[in-house]
Figure 1 (cartoon, rainbow, N blue to C red):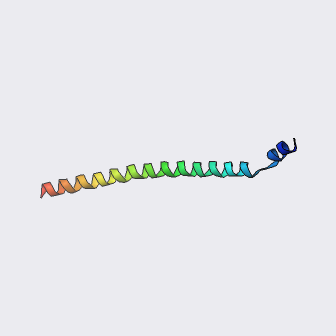
Figure 2: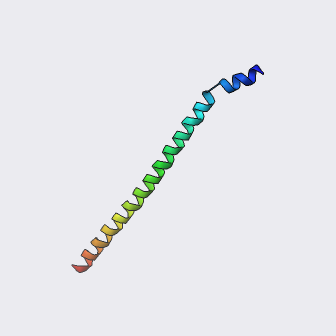
Figure 3: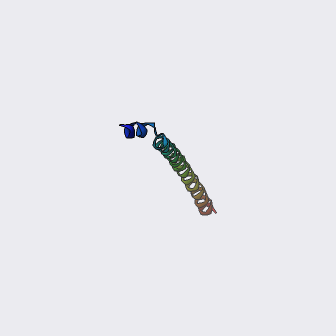
Length: 59
């Protein structure tokens, strides 16, 4: 019985789980932000490429 009480009193495991959840949340936020930024950057390069091709064709 004492072992079970000691197991529930130990907070190290809970702290590790909390840090793991925080790290996972930060990773999801970073992936979402980078994905959105990558899409916007790709669209920008496509637009620049199209403008350059139009300019080269006109000249």
